Image (cartoon, rainbow, N blue to C red; front, side, top):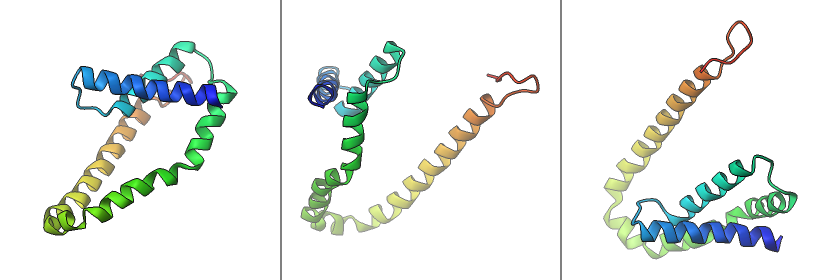
Length: 123
């Protein structure tokens, strides 16, 4: 578990370094996740059991990671109170846009991966 956790943290660290060095608008952990994905694709095989077990453990305890975010919201209630109207508009509109975009992308992807009459997939 220690080796897999070290690999995950190294990917996140590398993502942070790349994001800050290149002044990218993406967060470092997202870049680290993309680096991990690229590594797993380049290996051309399933991740080892240790990485799978460690990732599963982290996902099972994922809810604990929301505690600092919740505390941050509570400490900023005055700012949220001052900006309630923009938030009241932005949250439903961005949620709706996200759902519509996701649905559109899924429809496009499902059309390109449907098998044709001969049984082979179209692209």
